[in-house]
Length: 383
Ligand SMILES: [Zn+2]
Image (cartoon, rainbow, N blue to C red; front, side, top):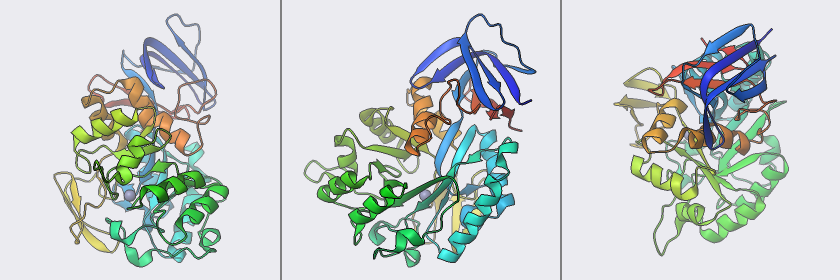
């Protein structure tokens, strides 16, 4: 039976951290959490040796890793990404697609379905759904996205986007595109998680999008207008509206570390999700790679496409977590930003992202250097 007892850990969860903790996982779910004295037993025991135990990280924006690009991946490739992510503490993720043909979208979703049918038996990061980045984005804010595959919303496109039988559907869009606010309303009504991004919308449009259900921003500061004291900008709108949340790429390249700290603190760690926005070369080191129909170079951890744009990151959530720690965020706050908040964003708060009885046994033990000592997916140790 899939049961493990983790002992001797500082438990960091949802804003707090407490030493001398233990967690019992039974049949894939957290059965009990405690501190101090313990009268539980399990077949497998793992001594965390005073390390920090966090909920497994949740990455809602990941285009791939270890040479696998989600847009061209097959099931085996997605599984390879899931293995790599789990070793880096990520226990749930949304494969993220850049704009592409409907035929290829349908093909990739078929491959995702093949993985979701069997993944529960494997200690790999579990695919929770799919993230379509920028089918309806602003061409002037396309970044590394290919505008030739952008869609115009005329009323039927939402129903036509390929969907999974089960799982989360998230999309990043610009509300200022033609019919954009209506699009946000339709997607939200259809159960999509709508995130605003690749945008230069004005405040009135953003407010209308908010009312329609778009209450989160994709990769804060990147591919959006910034902050100016007379031009609020998309970034300024998000920081000055308390009820808006955002995610941010904490790789130190997309956003200067000082501005990562400023943004996360101003917004509050309660409302920020860390993402990797990683691309296929993540985990492979520097080099030149063919992705998304162009050649992308990676030099000292920085990606660049032929048009001179940064083209995603080569980090994992673990690097983002380390960055947040270096900026002075506590492990309790990091547990919110890396696990709880993204789980909440995609509507899975009772499923994972917390260390509480009943949630999936997705856990990561970090040592004193914040490296992964062990990661567990539904109680199974990642290898
Ligand atoms: Zn992306």
